[in-house]
Structures are given as C-alpha cells and as structure tokens.
Image 1: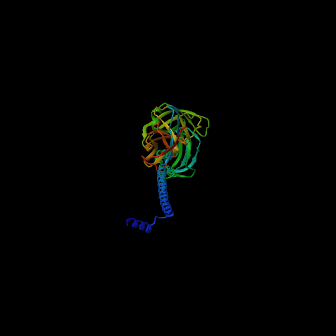
Image 2: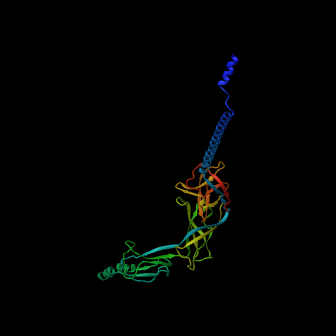
Image 3: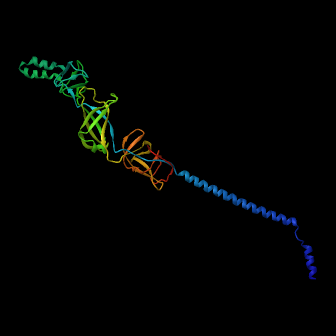
Length: 344
C-alpha cells in the first residue's frame, strides 16, 4: 500500500526537466555578475572621488620658487646720491625804499665783497634833502642806503629786479629780493648716509664725487661735518662734504654720486627686488621653514640696486625666501616648493 502511494506521488510530481535547472543557474550567475559589476563600479567611483579630493587638496597648496639671499662683501665702495649746494648763499634786499635806477651785475657774474650791485632812485629822500638842509647828514645817510652791494665774494645766482621797479626797504612784500649771491669755493655736498654706515662716515673721511655732466671725472673732498643725529623718518645721517671748486666748474643744485671707501662690519644681504612683500606694516620676506610653511619676517631695507635690493637686517644668509610671493600668502601657510634657485 505504501509502495503504491509513493509511486502515485512521484507520478503526480515529476522532477523538473534539465533545461529548467540550467535556466536557474544562468539567472543566479547573471545576478552574481551584476553584483560584482556594481561593486567594481562603486569601487572605481570611490577611487576617483578620493583622487579628486587629493588633487583638489594639492591644488589648494600654492607652489613657490625659493631663492637664497646673497651676502655682500665686508669692504666696498659706498655710493650714495647727493646734492651740491653753495658754501654760503645770501639773498640781497634793499635797505631803503625807491626805484631801481641801474643794476650792474647779472646772473653768473663774479663779484667781490662790497662791490656795487645796484643803485636806487629815492625821490622821497631827495625831497627831504631839499626841504631840510639842517637834516643834511641824516638824508645823506639815507642816500648811501640806496646803494646795494655784495656782502661777500661769490657769484650772482639770481637777479629778481629790473630798472624802474619799485622797491621797499627790507624783505617785506612780494618780489623784494633783488639778488642772490653764492660762494661756491669750496662747494658743499650734502648726502644722507644710511644708519648702518653712519659709524664709518666720520669727520675727515675722504670722498669723491661724480657728476653726469663730467663723465669719467672724479672730484675729491672730505667729510667736513655731520648732524650727529639719525633722522627718525629716513634712518639716515645728514653729512656735509667740502669739495674745492677754484675754477667754478661745480654748480650749486647739481646732482652727484658720492663714493666712500668704508669697511662695513654688519652682515648685509641682497635679494631680488621681487622677493619682498610690501605691506602696510612694512616690508616682509616670506621665508619657508623646515616644516614647509610660510614665516613672514620683517626686514630692514638698505640701498636699491634696481633689480636687487639691500637687506640690512631681519634675514639670515641660510634662509630661503619665496621669489615673487603672492599677496595672499599668510603666516603659517603650507606651500609646495617647486624648485630652489641660486641668487647670484
């Protein structure tokens, strides 16, 4: 009975055919392949995302080129700009009121002390003389005041009057200066010496000057005096050099370059002019430390050489500074060093 029931059951539920099993296998295989593809795609996209994030982070770190400061020699020819001025200069005013009757010397004329420069007509004084013979002595003294003479030997550098001009006594009013007389031998050369060189430029130090109007020629003088005080605005020492000018070739107001042969003990560096940041708080150099980060250092600027600039303090010769630093650089900012160049 049991055997008959089992046979009947097998007859009612026959085993699935082979092609059905094969189809199930294919479906499972396809599902596995799809899942694997999805996993691979997800992994690829995740890798791309991470690479993009890393690239973005790398791009956010600026790349910089470094340069080494160049040390300047301890002994050198110190060259500074200067201005020539007359040793003594004096404006000449009339001592009484009147009209210019005649002038005897013009600009460029050499004069001696006491030499007559101009005569004035003084109608009021003449009238006083006619009206009061008793006051002849006083009136005659007033007449002598009508003669204008040079206070010292020199050259006339300006004449500000002409015949017929009404002149008032003294320096009141406008256009009352008749002449300007200048003594130009010796001639004075004024130069502002940077503070770092001030101890080396003392009284008696020899100096030579060069002028564009005399190419290849040098005129020798010596330091005569200085202000003995540093100007807090410019950090310089006003210094005066006396240069002999017997032939009068050197003119007041001329521009000149002064050369001193001095020894400078302080460490001085030079850097490219485009290696500095000029900000409201003062000039800064962007130094890259061993940690690969920016450190902004205050520097003291000396002379400007054109493409290079002298650094008197604030930098160490072993430090590397950023060439062409961007205005956006900040203290502690990480940077990527592309390459380092040697400043020569």
